[in-house]
Length: 554
Image (cartoon, rainbow, N blue to C red; front, top):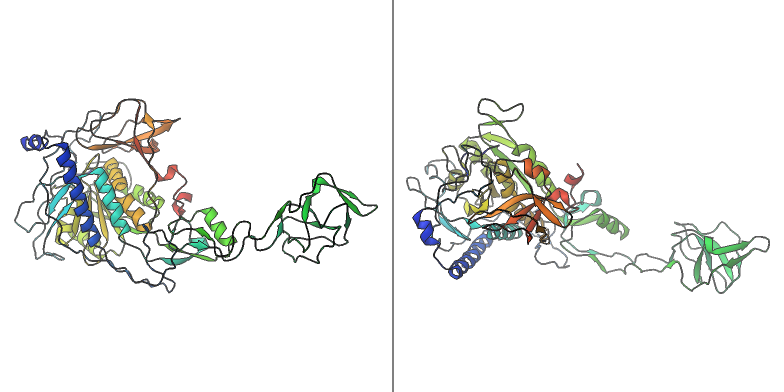
């Protein structure tokens, strides 16, 4: 799937060269101030929660605060945009050249120019425009007839941080989930032991339970089995057979494993072949936990072992954060859903890819809606969606049929990120629809550029909504020189080899061959890295054991 409009290859204008003379300290200070203003703006968008219809719904989670305070019922509505943002910054210069070695499809660059003016005020769903500032960028919703201002792109790390914070400021109302439906969810309430574990003294081994010093007289009977009562107390000098998990009788002092005992059947006496230590091979009551102990905190991901622990502790259900719901809108009249490309038409690569990818991130995803290049269909799909996130593919540039920007402007959306300083994929965007509407992530149409947008904006946003912790960053070395973009971050598919990573070829914006063989993406800073340099790695969700979701098994 190839985007119309894409990564510009024109040289930087004179204004860009002048802007580069600003000192590094001033740029850093401005970026920090812009990020704080953008975060305040994004947080102002969210305030209240939507009332859950589930009678078991509890208080909306606050993933940042991992507390064990019991949740109380609280409503959750999609908050409307609020607050007047800080004024925009200085527009950045135009496009920068793509680094050598990165393939871009002929005739399909990813343009970073600003969006065209929105439809007229008479268009359905049109709202009065307003100006909003985002970290490292300035954006204006324009009235019809005015030309859009140039804007600077948001630095890659700031864009990810903003998406994560926005997600964590949009709490999803927690609900009670039976154990067979809780896998992959994040706990909204701590799991506290409902009883001692074990709840009584049990035998850790098959063998003989004894009282006092030996040798011991064998008590008649079938012995003690798991799931039955403890039987009569043992008298000093007595023994009886016992199975693993069986309850220890009163007055017993130890368990002797079968292989460490010798039975004199003629005399009915048991002898130990090793020293017997009081308490050996007995699991005492409360060895694992006592009633009231916290077993798992708020924010823990429900994995298969978590399900087992909860069941052992007496739970039939867990209180978890719902999986974020995502609608996927595939744009473009040039896309085919079957057969070979022909007559200028190409196969839709993103529709089949995004659903499973999003499920592996812990989201619930509806079937892709293929809308073509129909602005009204896009407006209707955006404004009627009840999802938590709407993901669009293509149409984020400023071509004649790139409708995402004007439709969002006409709908009164808050444009939080409009372009990111990353290659491929810089014409991505993050917006929030008004009146409690969903978040919107606009992905470029080129496949690898769309993957970049998915990992830059959608992944941290969904992680924040679901209350998942950010993964620990790690930085293995790369033992070859990796060319970077002069000014932007690059995301390059890599594969792990022993203690290092190897960059893969076929990493152009329109290519999937590299990412299909990769197990991660290297974050290459502007200017590139030399051989032996450590690089940050973004893991792909199917290359690790977490998060545990149903998508991992299908």
